[in-house]
Image 1 (cartoon, rainbow, N blue to C red):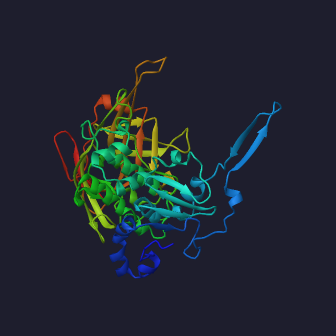
Image 2 (cartoon, rainbow, N blue to C red; image 1 turned 60 degrees about the horizontal axis):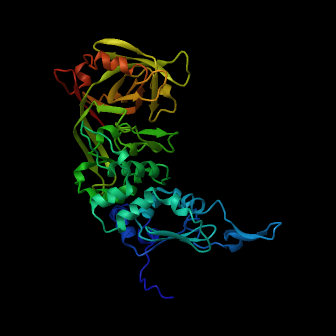
Image 3 (spheres, rainbow, N blue to C red; image 1 turned 135 degrees about the horizontal axis):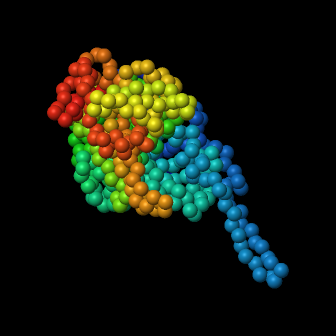
Length: 451
């Protein structure tokens, strides 16, 4: 059968290997190639470029078993037994799909033939099929994952509003800058980053360029300019997303070319903070910082790799004193300085970005930047109806000593038990030495820079 496809593109052949100049020219075009190709052939079961496409499939091990049972009355009924493992095991969890570059290629492809260990699978936005058999409930497992949504974006001729309505749930809308609305595609970007961060990279410097094609899809649907994208974060909802955290240890050394405030700085699975309104009836919140400016230095393309960057914020900045907790070895205790007084903190949840142990930063000068003040009112607590609980989410920062008012992010901090008292007291910075700030206003809010 002639498919009338004249050309095949193989990245390892069409990009000159170990040639920085050719890589710099071709890498930004890879997303365009995959999104416009007629079909993508994926060697899903292969662990390297020498693994090949085809496997010796055994149809008897794949196809369902159909058998007939006759009861004591002579009545009979046919039964069908299917494997519990299928697309998820042999495609989603396949060796190829653990690679970060493949995440974007798969998301942008219009059609994919997955050459898996058990059989060949077909995937496109409208259906998933298989060479021998596929479970009838397989689409339920695929709908909602980042690839399915991105494929809809790439092929469905619909308006932005229709696309947003198709792939997103209104309950996930948040609140930013005191406004009642946050663009719904931002939550989809959160999902993409979280799934992408689980994948492996041979070169950590590819962290941003390998997801640049998906950033372009967001840009195409929103009409946001290049100047609204900073090292993996969008200007819209920027402040809350500074609270990204890591899940598990870092796989590789950090990418120091990426600013410390970006999730792409570290090489771990990324988790996001809660929306300001996770339940619109019982939860409220406010952002406590203001983004004044942001900039990055692109390496090859506007949405790709960067060579440094900085953000300037205005907000509360509090000196901290972290120490070992006398009652919990794995949690720190500490104090925070507000209104020129030290306040003991009884319940801290600290997550350090790079230190192999949380005690790696003890004894160093650390500052707390509150970003999100979240209040939850419990309607179902029988003992304390209407009970209010409050949390302060923020960053731990360390001065760089390069210039006044410049910091690096070292981790995130959540204050739970003491948050309500601190807010009731009135969040107000203590006076800081001029070397720790760029400028201050009359309300003791400081302007400072994070790199």
